[in-house]
Image (cartoon, rainbow, N blue to C red):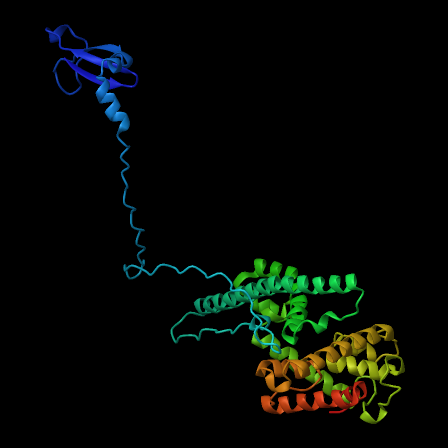
Length: 383
């Protein structure tokens, strides 16, 4: 007699005498099969010895630890050799503004390395490789925009705390006095980037690897931190040509000269229309399309609009000049920051050495320190 447990019953098999009388025959053979009798398992459990049950209860459960299977090895379909695992991208480190005068490198376009074409390489494959390089460049730019946004949130909280404290104490204070020049430029450039992100993100999703073929013609909608070197160079060259035409009087017959600047014209109300438009063109404060309307006998662009743009542009230069002189001077600026600072002040930078630009910027700051707004306007009216 044999027993077999199944669920909550125990089957007891009793061998029979005559196999030919049994309807239970094993498949594949003619051996007789026993007829089962089912008994509840509870009867069998009660008959167990008490000591055996107690010992079984006291014994701790044995946990079998199964070794983890090694990760599958991926083979290269061409060489049939194992490939290296793809490294995971490191999280973006927080921006640390250790420099007081130079903003972080995340506010500038990342380096772009375009692969060279091999002798026997197909053009389509070369174009795809270039597209991948551009995609990596744009992804880095988007990550930098996100990191700058998070850093600006911390700065804005600090500025709001400063303003609330002054309001509670009934004290007057400018928030620009508690931030460095690097932090001020971070806030300013982040605002310029965030205003262009929605349109650029839509273009990035639609075009993909072919985005560089279209963004060259749509530079104004591309965030400055995502502009390729060709776009930056083209923008600077176009602005310098526009400035040269304005100095020659080829736009609206107004020839700028430092002799027309005095204490009266240094005020915003004393500036004429020609002087306002020249400053706006020299600093790149409004679009170049307005230059075509300036040749027509029409009051375009409106004088009130140009006056507000010039006022905002000169106010920014005044703040930036004071911060540069306070936080390190022109000697503390990095080469790229020297070029950007000169471009913001209407100074040509193409084919000019960095040291020469640094010297010109130092002259600008000295003129600001000695003569104030009058000295700045004289430099804007002269080459």
